[in-house]
Image 1 (spheres, rainbow, N blue to C red):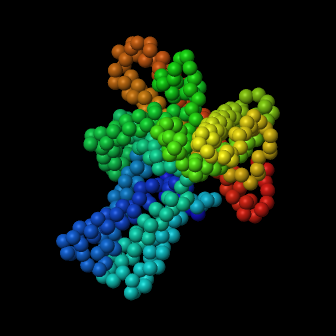
Image 2 (cartoon, rainbow, N blue to C red):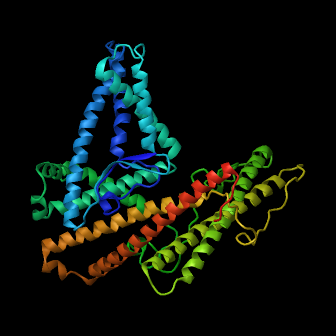
Image 3 (cartoon, helix red, strand yellow):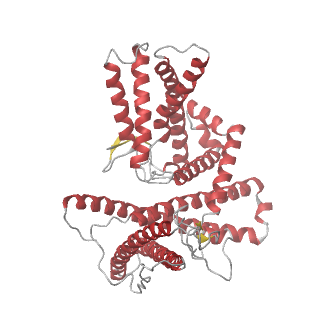
Amino acid sequence: MVRLFVPEGEEQHALTSRRPGALTAEPSVTAVPLSSALAATGLTGVLALVGRARPGTFLKCAALAGTLGLSYTTCKLYGQRELNRGVFKLDKIEAQPGKLWESTEHWTVEDATLTGGGLGVLAALNERAFPGAHGWQRFLGSALVGAALGSVLGQRIFVQIPPRLISKIDQTQAMTRHMQYERLQQNEAAKANLSRFGKLALRFYTWPPHQLLRELTGAEAGRENASSGAQGASPHSASSFLGLQSQNTISLEVEFEQGELNGPDMTAGVRTYQDSLRTRNARALEAYLAQLSTMRTTMVQEARYVWHVLAEKEKAYYAMVGESDEKDMCRRECDLLGNAASQCVMREAVISFHIADARKQLEQIPGRINKTTSASNDTTLLLDETPDTHYNPEFTTKHLRAHWTKQKAALAQVEQILSQYEVAVKQNGDRFLRAPGEIHGRVKAARVAVENLRGYLEATSRLLSEFEERGRKAEKMKGKGGSWGV
């Protein structure tokens, strides 16, 4: 249970934010085996089409592609390290040293990748296996293919984050890196302190074609982040600063996965009214009703659990005397838990509506004996039972993880706007300072939004770690048959 190639200054700067959960500490390293295996597959296929493929061709191609990939990745990471050190000096940060490996309390993608690579090497020790591949190409190719299979399996088994959110995390990190390296490029004193390799790396990262690629990916991330706002918005939130919230209304959103509510005559949670009483399928409706009932039971458990944790947090908050950083964090955690609890309750209400609608559809079928019971009206959803101490709050953990990713993206957006403003002030001097007051008002709001987002990001990170640990404890205690307090 390890993380490999932990960067210098992790969690000390926006450049080196820790990736959540079981995600790799340095994704480009574990990407090399997979890209090598894919390249070898394509090249072997082409050689087979022209009749030039021989036994061992696949492993030889994988070894050659892996050698090139590892060389490029090594240069890339070394260059990033040099540039990161320059940014750290610019911001007067004493970075903690990086680590070749770091122990964790849970399985990671790196574990699966190392296991796959080790099994590949063991397979290569068998002289009868892999005919045609010899020497270093045999062992390196086999290790890379095994590591590629391990990384794919590890991604599927250990990573509980949707691919779209992983993509957002990567886009946010790329935007942050581009913004910070631009700062470095504009500071002649900081550039002069870079090593020769660091100057080459800075030239590459600020090369116009590379900049254009980053601008395109950054714009796409900005559009996605703007279209996926969090529930509600405080007066100093990023959405409020960007002018995305109406002046006269508030928006309380409830989120479901794509297809989660799909059923007979139902698409994206909305009736289509394309059926008829004569063709209506009672069995399909009964199966849909059973699915919804299971979803509702789970959501009721989730709501009661989160409500209980929120009550404990509030008890601790109101016991604190005076203002402090810890009390501010606790206040933000209560806010986030209240948001999560309201999500659970609203989801349960929507599911209950669809349960009632499915029962209504069954009752409308001519000649059918009604076997369904009336929908329950659980007005004491949050108060009538003590939560199950073995319960794993998966939905809330997932909700917090998604919220953390959106906050990271929003913070990167606003920080980029502020960076552009600072550059414009330096380039234009007094002329820019005499610009309309609206610009300076928005900049002031942006600075407030940044501070607020940073606080919520830290609170979300703490709460996410707590709920991930609660989930792990719940799974362990289920296996042991013990109990622990929430």
